[in-house]
Image 1: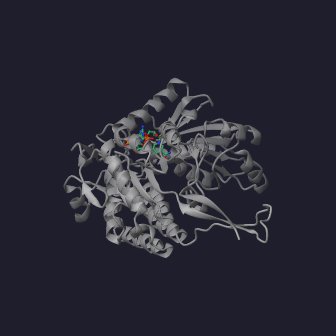
Image 2 (image 1 turned 180 degrees about the vertical axis):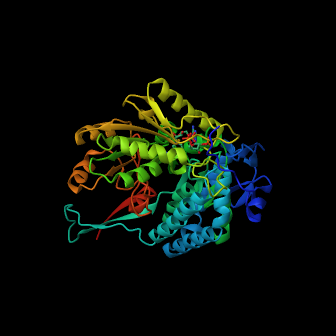
Image 3 (image 1 turned 90 degrees about the vertical axis):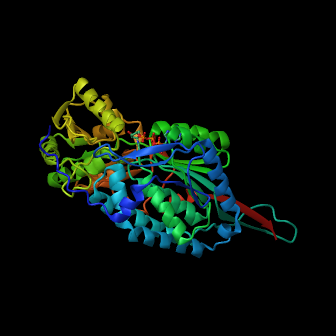
Length: 504
Ligand code: NDP
């Protein structure tokens, strides 16, 4: 039993949140709150103690079919289609205001359902969601094509006028994971609504609650029925039929690379457009001249943020051999002092993982690391309590081929390895099927700029990690996905380009 378990205070959940979880929830289809046709439900659990919070409908293919038809009807309705861009912007801004006004409730629901710290839910999940919605609202009025000077043979006494227009892609199916549930819902719903699409969103079975609460606010701010449908259920019974439904024009997915491949294949059968934001194994590269104090704090937060349950978690640490002992020792010391506890406890630094199944999966990687010869300098002990906790763990004596170096663990487990030469570390960093994020820590601008183009990752941070901004395109190289979220790039993912050529 570790000594650093924070003691949870009396649960400080507000009356509004209590009321929300007091009775079984329904899902939102075509403007109505409904049960699954089968009547089946799924329980959702508090990861800090394993208790049932409430239940949600367990949708199946029939429910998905109705939701997709509702989204199609809404897409073609004049009530939605005829809204001016400025009206779509206004609705999204109102939604952002409502989410902000109910921020405490959202943070509490996220903390209960996902297990994450209430402090983090407020500072990261909620803040990013509100800011993202405001940012993407602005895009509704800035969607534009271009005029193009074509070189076609001129018609007699005439010429051609050619241009492109950007049109909403249509009905979007969206499937999201459990690590940042509200934020992920906003990252899909926001661009869909800004561009004039309609959407069927399936949250993860572990964390459906904030998406359902968001559904209530979408109704409150005045979205027409069917524009946003939120369908709860498992990946197999609800996610797979959504991805394969011929009635959707685009699928937007965030989650594991394994499921992303299944979704990509299902999409290809119908030529459904797909954007896939998948797993990662992001390297943190520390050059010889880096500031060790900044690295210790930055690298610890790169991996232990959200219990390591982040697709960009800095899970591989490559430190120049001159700084290796100092940096790894500093991170291990920090990790050993981190308080484990309920997300409701403000003292908690490491909250529980999402589920028993996931905790066991992370634990199996710790066992695999030991079995393959890596050495844990801290952590790697099983906390003896009811929640799904894993101690922050730091491995050394590892080699590139080990599973803990190659595979996405999605928990608070760091593997540190030394290097000597820049080319050597670039090769080690790229020796991964993934390419989502990477960070470089150094004060040498020349070395930094020489290294950036060599690192195969969708985002490279310098002297920081996990910095995600609504304006900065985000997505992966290699098996970390296809497409980009955020910025102008996300608008392209939710629109079709139509070329128009007029003989005049
Ligand atoms: P999954 O990829 O399995 O789940 C993500 C979403 O996909 C969930 O909504 C899930 O539904 C749904 N889903 C699952 N199977 C299918 C399917 N066959 N067809 C359509 N949708 C499906 O991630 P997990 O939650 O199971 O986590 C497993 C691992 O994935 C983690 O340990 C981590 O390595 C990685 N991961 C990466 C994330 C990232 O942000 N890149 C996020 C989450 C996980 P449901 O949960 O309801 O079954």
